[in-house]
Length: 212
Image 1 (cartoon, rainbow, N blue to C red):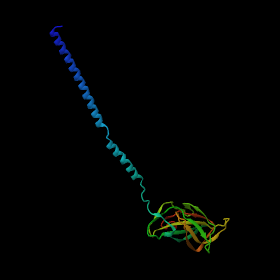
Image 2: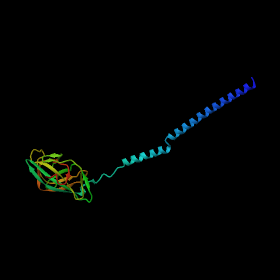
Image 3: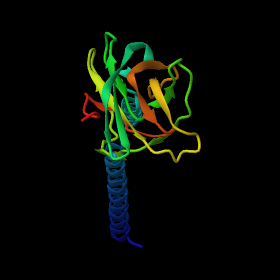
Image 4: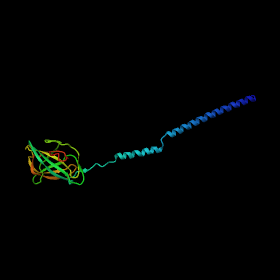
């Protein structure tokens, strides 16, 4: 091989080596750029930690109990009064009132427990039946809040027949237990009330509307 031929061969090899080196550098630069973009788009550990600590705080706020309002009305802060009686076609109606004598509001809901008493204060046979509809009309079953000095009422319906196996008697007083309590209250029934054991009991309603 002549000297000129060797020179041309060396030039060709040098050019090929330069092209290969250039291709290798371009691929390496592209991979590095893609890796940088991927790392930038991924969420950081700081953001993940922030989200994790926010959720329990919000859940706790939703589940924290709040005040439910006034406490239930108890016998110790109530005064029981007799509103009066009415009679119609073998049926009698007796109205009673509860006054909140306490310094704070209280709430009540439902039916009172009742027991008729004789002249000496002894118990008479009493079979109560809770109802929102009696011989004299309807009364709603609803929650009642009593401010200090406010009143609620209920009524009892009695029959004047003589069909009861326990017989009939004259009740001279009523013993009553407020809902949400076990303590009792008593009130006299002036001149007495003729009753024959069975009695319908209305729910407590606000004011004196139970006795029309």
